[in-house]
Image 1 (cartoon, rainbow, N blue to C red):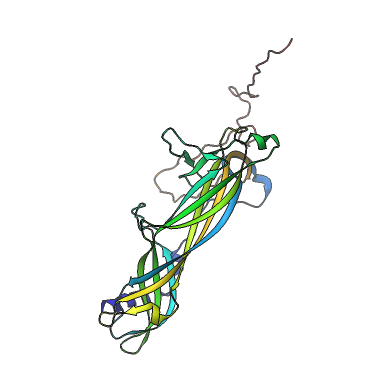
Image 2: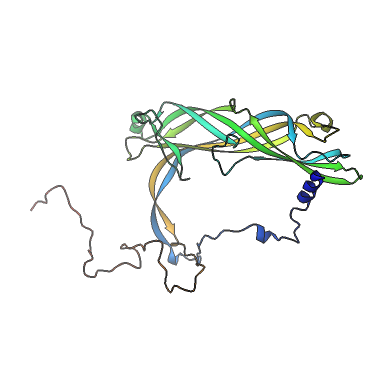
Length: 331
């Protein structure tokens, strides 16, 4: 009985007439508006991370898993007619980022022709990337030969990507129940793609170009990030061979092949200052409370000689920026 309930609940999980899409999903608000004319465009300097060189890789791996237990059990008196759809997604536990079941990639890179900077304890020096996490390593190489011809220096790398953790697999079955009705029945399983102590390992090689380490205030950084998809199918594409149902309990076990499709991008990054054309700062319309008459601003106004709201040349304002020279001026 419980399995039928589970099925009914899944079957009626969101008819459009009961719950319109607008309530379930949302759109974002940026506060950026532009009237399309260049009248209000200004230049803004921003301190950003520039990509100096990048390479993209696609990697794939297969994992075979046998006798995976799916829940719920098949309702008594039912039989499976066919498989409608198999879905696979990454498992992630938001309450524990170090959960061993979390599906994750761990890239390990070894360089030749350059090296990653280390501190006195032998740990890599990692710096903050654009994602706000410590995801970039500083690279050092002797770039003097290539600096002379005004070119970048190649560094070569070997990368191992370790894949570990679990995926969630959902299978929609078409079953014939005990009353001879054709019903959609969904079963799920949380499947480890590789044993915890022996992850899947994929290897690839790359070459990246780094700029001079001597002609800059910053060492170049190495960043890599990957994304992964999983696709699943029955091991031999046969219901009879791959799906086993216990006649007494209705317990379902299935043999599967899980394909892992991985995209990785490696970048050499240098910090730079850019001048960008901007249409000004975004202004959000707040949800105002009726008590206060004025509210503080979140960001300071830009005051320089180019902005329209410049301070002018009133008392206490310097007309020219102060400058000095190390050489005495000759009389």
